[in-house]
Length: 65
Image (tube, rainbow, N blue to C red; front, side, top):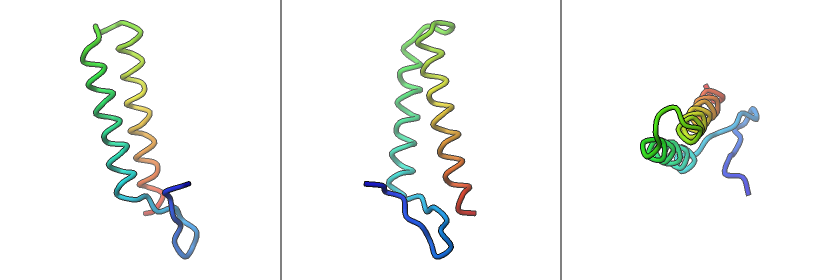
């Protein structure tokens, strides 16, 4: 089930719970990244994953402007 809704002109509406969930996932990525040595594959993986989630959240939030 999608938690996204659309408004009268079919734009996506992001819910508060989706924003909070994505922010929590980003925080978890940074926590995992902090446990890794800089320059390792794991550090790079968590850093890239956090940035990907951040871009995804920004894109979703900007869709409704």
